[in-house]
Image 1 (spheres, protein in one colour):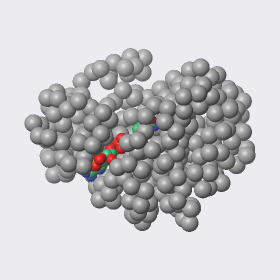
Image 2: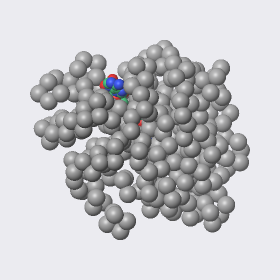
Image 3: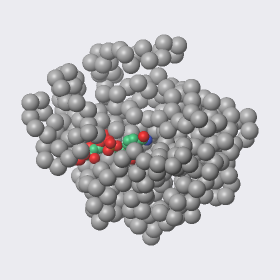
Image 4: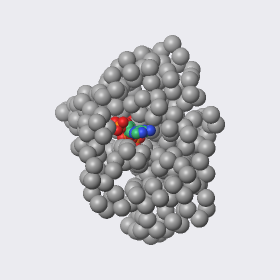
Length: 329
Ligand SMILES: NC(=O)c1ccc[n+]([C@@H]2O[C@H](COP(=O)([O-])OP(=O)(O)OC[C@H]3O[C@@H](n4cnc5c(N)ncnc54)[C@H](OP(=O)(O)O)[C@@H]3O)[C@@H](O)[C@H]2O)c1
């Protein structure tokens, strides 16, 4: 396994990070723990979770906690073998203080996450979504409190645009508060709204750890035009988490498959290799049910996308992604 720098943190992380959003259901606790241990043995040293993750049982405002508890059980006797990232900010209940990036919520949730994770320190504490109602200096000061108390080592952001990251960087530098070191955004061959933000992250040493680089499984090659979703796939089990599988989507998927077959590699490896080749990439947060799926992702590390393919790929994905940011475009 090779390792990449996680932005300005100095941490070295495996280019594949184990996502835990489906731990609990459909991946049982026992299978999740086994999967974590197998992933560590493969050289994966980066685990992504969130206070709200509880597998398919999750809904907006559900209490979460399940995935963190599983990670805690799996890691308690081998804590030093992985960087553990968790998140705060999404609702964990119906009440007005049970969400967002206020000091109250962050400092309450960090203690809950530490307990569930059975650890003294969260390596990377990620603000899950922007909270437009809480001043950023409140959030950053709370993060500083958590870092000074030794509860958090580094802080990252998720679902933030580059201008929002820019605000965070500026405020942190002005006040000497902890500086954002990572950005977790949705990004895949099929989803490139954040394409231009990657250069900003590169310039400011913010390590990008995209999620859904397989677009929930669409880029694995297992969904075929005109055929029912395979049994035990996400599209069969949790269709509301998947995109609509229509002809325009299959046109794009089949075009990507043709490019992958030019290189003689499966589409999954091609897709992940392309994502990893983008600016500022530290690690792809990949979901998996079985270790074979993580092994497939790790195999993408051996694939090089030839230069001429980048233009061919862009031709399959015309604007609007190119129009998202005309200033930097
Ligand atoms: N920050 C955020 O807002 C945010 C949001 C979403 C997710 N995340 C993080 O990103 C992680 C990944 O998200 P995700 O699971 O939705 O997306 P993903 O990584 O694009 O998709 C993973 C799913 O694809 C299928 N798959 C993976 N490898 C495969 C293979 N080799 N062959 C066939 N199928 C394969 C599996 O589902 P099936 O086998 O069930 O089909 C797997 O659960 C999450 O666990 C979470 O940690 C973060």
